[in-house]
Image (cartoon, rainbow, N blue to C red; front, top):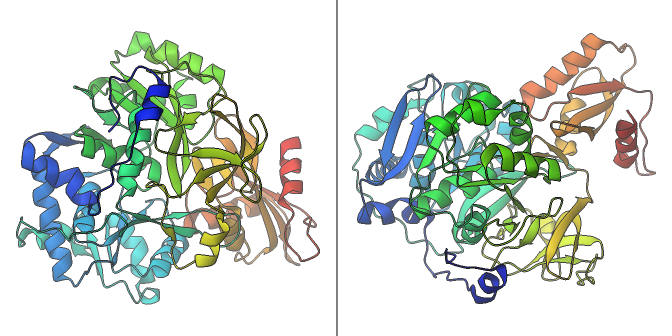
Length: 542
């Protein structure tokens, strides 16, 4: 943990040293360690869609996760097996991850808005053995079971549904004590699929040490999270690294109560109301959420907030959002940076240094972040290059699941290449310049065009498709598809809507093209690849 009495970044960075034990288990660290010391300490507060509130202590989480761990073991789950968690923010999501991790299994966070194709690919690629989900997820999984031979069991938190078993009743008969598997810090723990520029998503595999690797960045971006009275919430889904490893797991490790809430639909008013009613002291608000909240006039006159820290990441904050945050929240929003493969490696920290709008921050203590050339050579200060992180680093992924070639391409020497371009000044401040790939950033999500293009060409009317991000004031970018139709089909608004819906139901609600343009031809390389930079230029002109 970072010393909360640090007075300067230089002192903090100069004295920090990692303490990564040989043996470490995330499930034990975020649950049992506190349950042994303070069993009745508040761990989780669940606010459901009707506003009802349920509170869970660390003793509750230990009891529930132990019962589920015993249930999973009774169903044949062994260390190293993969367990999918297809749930929104709710208590079962937390103790499903904890249970599987105690067992030595590998958890796969899955977004509830994933469609059938997205789910089938991830579950088939990972060889998942069990999935814990709700009624909506069970309905989407039911028609996929024949294509998923490794998937032996689906548990439903809402009761039995066809081939999905009722989780609560099956847990009820199991002991609430469990001896956790003694995992090494480098043993695999969490498999998170991340979008790339071509083909299907890749599974970024993390070891149990990833939680310890996240802690300095989490603490720094929240002005030393873990202070008396701290209480955290984020609208970011726990299926993403930003919700799971930036908020839920590190907060539980630090003894900070986590408020779980899933709005039927996120609105700025609902967010302000929750911050007030639940007396939230710390929050991670993605830039898109901040932009929506900024549209509310005079929030200080409508709600009484008691925030101590606000962190944001996923997109660069500008001077306008930082100034608005100071007025609306009474504090400076701290910006952080990372990606699924290597997260929370850069941050600002208002407790230690003045924010520089348009500049992400400085390297979080413990991480060596530089700007390098294509061969991994460090570049001089104020020179544009690839933002990179030097290995070894406890927050860095173990590699891509069953994809050593892609893992190797992620590195230049000992530098992990983020794929983002930036500049580093003589004081170590790092400025994000842009991406050097085609990944689309929309509402804080990183979206790979390849998966969408693959889905589009499955539509009976589509001959070819190119997908890019189109600049958008609220979402940073929206997904735009340029489509060449097959002979016999005519362009129309109705067909564009049908094609967009085709993607929405098969992949995910955040990935479908919000605009579909019909074109006669696409710009192609001599090998037949879509030249997306030309499509991006066209979208920017529009």
